[in-house]
Image (cartoon, rainbow, N blue to C red; front, side, top):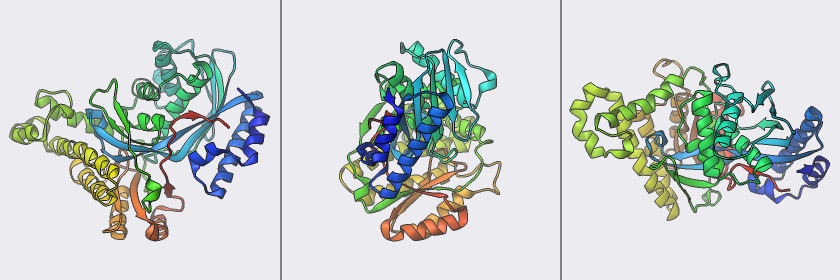
Length: 427
């Protein structure tokens, strides 16, 4: 634990290498980040009356390759980004976890009762309760602690604010009570368990893994209990392109069934072919069985299975292109992935709300501006929310200006891939 007054002094000195690794070299950005941490420390001290604490950061994530492949034991290419959730936390020598998160009601979790609660579904308390329950089952210690959180990964942005919150909670418990021994991959799996079983939302493991591990990574979920995570040796900052995430708007509240149907339909094709997931079958198997599959699963399920097979294999080629420094080939495959999501996976807008197609509109505008010089695709789960674009430096200002003219000021987020996952900050 560190004295809060000492932490504030270190932050105000302005010479913190960790901040540069998380947020880049821009002086104004670093000043803004320092102010955010200072404000959070002061808020924690006022709210909980503690004089010692630790600082934590957990990134959002961007999916770069492999759209809706993780839940069928496929491959993904992902990166942790410079937008993050930050926390100040300290033990409180009780059995109560008390969390004060900016913009949300404060809540408490009594760790003497870790059974799922129906009235907590879709609330942060459910995630914390589930994480603690699974950590304790796995042999880790957990006691009461206080935390103030500044959630700076926008909710519904496609940057996985919930996954970031989950692995942030895991990192806090790891460092406060377990000497930092929680492995990032294990932290990710525990976060996914809490989201599935306690929070009530079906999700794969990609989001949590990218947030927990950090950097540009490829993940192979062929063996879900132990996914293979590999770092990709490519520096995006040297490419001359910026990664821009644009929030096109739209409400995710009524999309749970759309999200749930996607893996269900993919798995229905696998099941009809005698397998559990699409990773266990080939495209040749699917094409051969199409006449029978149309009656058993419906056409959309077949198209989604086709998307899985193509995007799953495309990840391998994307990683190869990046490792070989062939950024042009990589961009071409980003566009191919986006078209596949639109035409075959059909997760660009909800079939129940065809009037609202912000993602499709954002993709159309991006194609107009970036054709032959950049790349664009849906970002994250789809149906509403965000798109991703790789924008060359000479088109960046115009791209952001025109996108924000349609989707509103602040809709665009210029990001970079950071190397650190969910961590305790060492100032």
